[in-house]
Image (cartoon, rainbow, N blue to C red; front, side, top):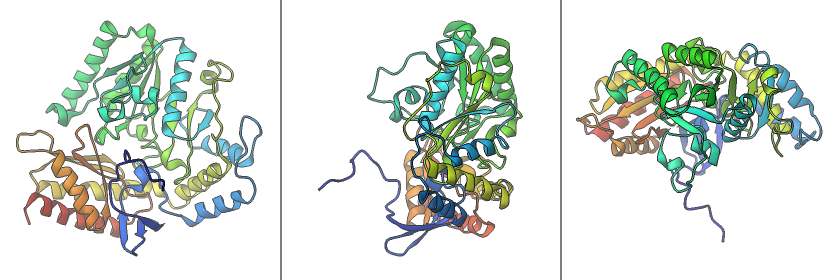
Length: 419
């Protein structure tokens, strides 16, 4: 009898029977408050009726219409619709299936369009598991261990992770930008650097937001040296941070935006957006793929965009995110083992540390598992897996946030022995 690979590690013991909104129901009939959202994917919640209907209707028309062979209406409509929400000037799209594929497509575009070999990524960034994307990932060695040699031409600069360094944000930011300039002098000359790849908030790296000064510094250096600024919005896009795009918090202009996750409410769909001028500089035929821009996924994405707009989900993410962040910080104020709580919108992380300030991986794992036993599904992240993250769907209600915070308070009290 076949079985799943033993290399797959399950975060919770839940076997799902069905999902609805912010809840998952297991095969034994138990209800779980899902604050993982499929790692930020089910933006409109589980099985939103409008998304389900759109997918069902499309399945009855055509499922697979390979988009370098023929065109289909959902793809054309989605392309046009995304033009209403993409950053100004990014009017050309390429679609794929996964975030990793989007990263690699942007890497290919950056190198071909500029004729330069190197890219700079930032410490703690996660960009995927395929070889090139894993070569660009520094959120943890588990994503690249054992597959060396990795792809060359990738260089790493610091991210302003103030809590990690034990500094204030301004000091961390000045350090990060100074070290980036030093990297230009010692490792990758500006005229050999094709692009910066940056998450507006570290995802797997620990839910650490960037800041306005740092992002402005990247934009200024990109403009000065002819480097592309590629912003990875795979986890932060489509309202997740309380703004439509994560980089909207920092008033920065990207040259390329990477999209996936929340775009299609659980259907596989990713892509890159750039200006037509920039896209045209890459090699003809260098973009393609069998399943990219799948008709059912595109139909689901169109419905997702409708739901985000009609139900004011960006505004809801901002309001509910403020509620969640403030509530998690109140719990941390009573818990010395939680060193910092941070986030943007409905991306909130609680970092567990020991008395000497070192990461407490075991306690974070215990809290994540205890929360699951109590019916609240969470995940960990960070280089040491010592950050417990909350990622509810954008449709989450104030009452569900309160319920989650109550469970989290009981969980933290139990695992720290304060109860």
